[in-house]
View 1 (spheres, rainbow, N blue to C red):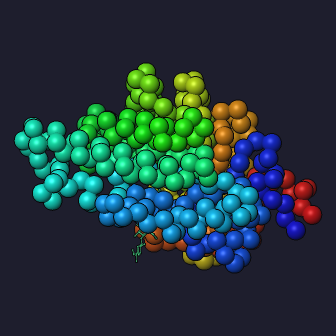
View 2 (cartoon, rainbow, N blue to C red):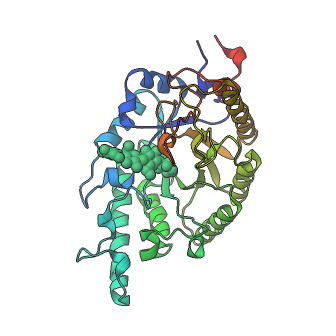
View 3 (cartoon, rainbow, N blue to C red):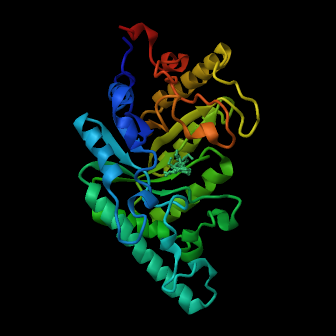
Length: 344
Ligand code: G3I
């Protein structure tokens, strides 16, 4: 048989996968149990999943993941308390049901801001209180940086109504509700990009100076075969480590294609492409291992090529971003990150 991925990395860092609750049975469950010691909800713990309507919390799917993980000695990490996407519209409606962002009256804008921060407090406090005993590692805010937007901050409804206060409130309330033992992360994609990385660095530093309890940076790491250079991923982690912060790889996958080209390999992915992917995965994991002192976990945004958000984004084409293929068999990329000599 093949060796366990997480056991192969036991001297380095945990290995995780993001999944949907329906993947916790059958062959997929066996694959997960064998190869990962961390799990993340691909969608089940997002704001709209947990609180679709104000005051109505829906725990069923999230609990299912937590129970599966517990039964199999797997740790869950949380994704995500706050995001501009997959969040109920009700958060951003004023007392009269109008979008808060449309308000021009200064006094009413203040009222709206207070209301939104109260709703945020309740959301964060309720969820953290429920899972603090089961979940140690938390994505608190997701994707708040956007270098193209004014001030380099994503012009989300959160930001338009509260400025950066929603970030501060999220971390403070999470710490208050969860205590000193939970680890709180700010998560984003493209953290190797210089403009984005530098804006994130500046924000995090400003927050830390104010005493906002941020423990680390989550680097999503949605990469492709050519981009970005592994060195730029590591350089970014080193910068944040310099602030005393932890780093996690939170959403790793490797597209076979360049962003929006219309090439499609179809179901039969050429052997040389799979080999190229393996070589890039080897380079990446060698770098992660060499920097294990500043990386405390590596999570894939999926587990096998039969299920990936990439296959329809940004266009529909055959993607194969993981170490396991659609039949759940180990690919060349698996053997590039696990020593073939350990095959039993
Ligand atoms: O649940 C509904 C279903 O009821 C409906 O019939 C169906 C029709 O479209 O949609 C289903 O919801 C979809 C949901 O995934 C669950 O499958 C949404 O349309 C779809 O937009 C959503 O996509 C997710 C995406 O986040 C949303 O932005 C992906 O699965 C998920 O992998 C992706 O994850 C994000 C991370 O949270 C943050 N970083 C980037 C990453 C990849 O985009």
